Figure: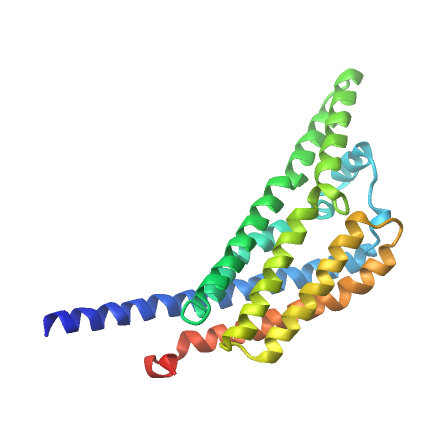
Length: 256
C-alpha cells in the first residue's frame, strides 16, 4: 500500500514538473516572439538591404563608433539572444512528445542545441565592438592596421550573409523542420500547426542558402524570407497556445 502511494506521488510530482516546463516554454516563446517583432521593425526602419551593410572592418568600426546598438544589431546580436531564449521552448516541445515520439523529438532538440552553439560561437558582434574600441583608442597607424586586419578576419568568419555563419542559421532551421515533422506524426499539436512549421522552415532554409551562397540575389532571398518568417511566427504562436493548454490539462486528459 505504501509503495503504491509512493508511486502515485512520484507520478503526480513528475506531471507537475512537466507542466511547469510547458509553462516555461510558452513564456519564453512569447519573449522570443517579442524580440522577433522588434527585429522586424528595426530591419524595416533600416531598409533591410544586405548590400547596404558596411562591407569593410573600418566601416564597421565607424558604425560602432557612431552607435554601438546599430553595430551590434547588424552583426546579429539580437538573433543570438533570441536563439538562446528559445532553448527552453525546444525542451518543452520535446517534453510534449516524449511519450509519442521520444527519439525524433530528442533529435530535434539536440540539432537545435548544436546549431545554437555554432551560432553563438561564430557570432562576432562583441569581438568587433572590442576591436572598434581599440581602433579608436589608438593613434598609432600600425596598431590601427592590425585591428583593421583582425576585423576583416572576424567579418569573413561571421558577418551577416557570409558563409562563415551559414551553419549557425541553417542547422536551427533544420531543427525547426524536424520538430514540425515530429509534431505532425505525434498528433499532440494540430496538423495545421505542423504544416505551417514545415513550410516556413523550408522557405527559411532556402533563404539561408541563397543569402549565403547566392550572388546579387538579395531580392529573391527576401521573397523566401518574408513568408517563411511570418509562417514560423504563426507556428510559434500556435504551439505556444498548445503548450499553455498542456500545462493546465489534468492527469486524465493528459492520458487520453
